[in-house]
Length: 443
Image (cartoon, rainbow, N blue to C red; front, side, top):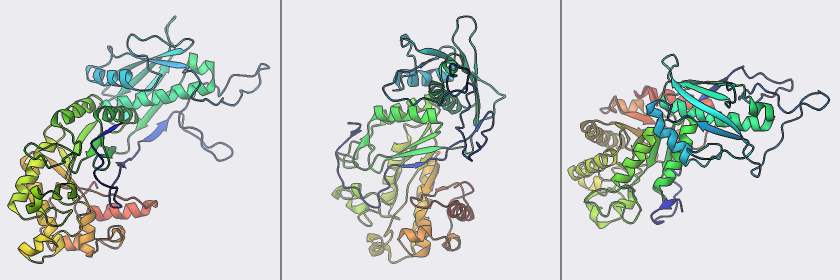
């Protein structure tokens, strides 16, 4: 019920599926988390109240109780929306009014019977560095409930901080009435990455409905994600191209614009994520596009008509979005240059074909004021003359030498490395270094 369109293809082993570049912010709580005597590390969230109510005889506090979904919410969070900085107000309304977390008191709503109330206010401060925030609780004056103050710099950091207040509320429920009535905690974080991105596959099975994109964005903001990419091979509507995404439930321009507006209020950048070489089999299956077909999945490069069509796709996908970045795909374009391309232009080296096509598409992006990024796997596979993923993950395979024989990749082209399997950090460190040797400083 949360998706649109019809199931038009079976999942493929080469399909990307819901993919996320989930690089989490490293937390720094006050005081520093120290190892317990048994070597375990306590929760990074510091609540300065006891872990449970004291025994009747004044002995040690009891162990935290276990909460279940049937337990009533003990804390109601009242966000001061009208008193917040103007750039936060719409996003705060979206979260408070639309989020399915019962902790928030909706404007005009009643507080749950017997629940405690925490007030939350926001203050943007030039003293707080980008990527950091500071959360402090204080007792309320007179009959006023406790006040939690969030100081921040970037919009997204304010919403990440609100997510941490939710964590503090849950922790207080586990510790007892004193922690609920008079919370005492501080929270601070330093982001370790400028970009924390989530990519949602909207090209297999169903397209995520707009309202469900909104729900995802609210969760993303509370977790501090800065970027959303909706992976759309042919699931966005293009004027004059009825067979592009035919019966696939693609997004309209108005829907993408609405998603971008909703995300902007939350401090999240929406980046178009499309395909401009491979993974275009859904489109290329129709006779309308037979002339643009190299193989069943790969569009025909070097043909002038191809680039006129790709410019239409790039302009359409980027037009409703504020971001001037765009992901143009180009991954898993196996067989590039080996279908109709070979018939028309003869046998040629794969890396040279790929880089030539990349340069042509890059020029289209430049004309539209866009900075593109691509998946990097084909650079490795073509250099090794091996379409298997082994060639991509091979630690000894470095395409820098192959690229030196051709013009190379444009200097402002960002490379995105994807990996489904490896768990050892040294493997990623080596791949990052290989990408830097290709001229991409921030893969």
